[in-house]
Amino acid sequence: MSLSTTLLRGISGAYFLQSGIGKLNMPTEAAAGLQQFAATGVPQVTKLAPDTFGKFVSYSEIGVAASLLAPVVPNRLAGLMLGAINTGFLSIYFRNDQMTQKDGLRPSEAGTGLSKDIFIAAIAGALIAAPTAAKTKKAGKAEKAEKK
Image (cartoon, rainbow, N blue to C red; front, side, top):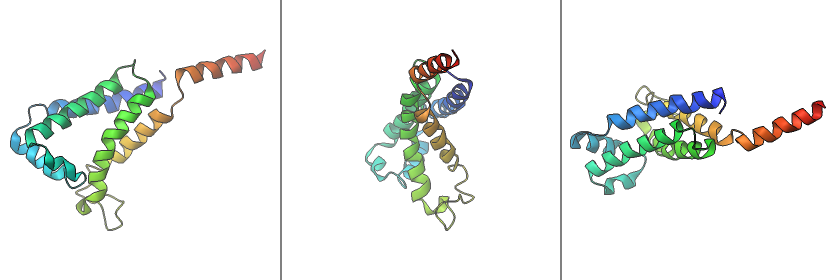
């Protein structure tokens, strides 16, 4: 694994791990508030009980963190998992008028916290597009053959 990939996975993995662990024993009232906020982007979450929703979010974030922090998980799979959870976060950002300025893109003061998810989308894209170990090895062999 390259240094750049290690940094992308390590930092975002640590962030998601901390976030998920912080939500593990979330009180029902806090889970309900988070659920209500999440429903602005993904209305279907209202079908869950608040405690179930809180556990779902917590376990999802911990699972994504685990995929990012485990070096045995391929970059593409880790990137796809990060992208999947991030899609929900971005839908909240873009579907909630209070999160963006009038242009619907730039973050408002209230949306600055969620706007970080745009960077997470870029990290997911970089992991998905990163060359696989087999391609890197094959390119290295081809380069050595050209030098001979």
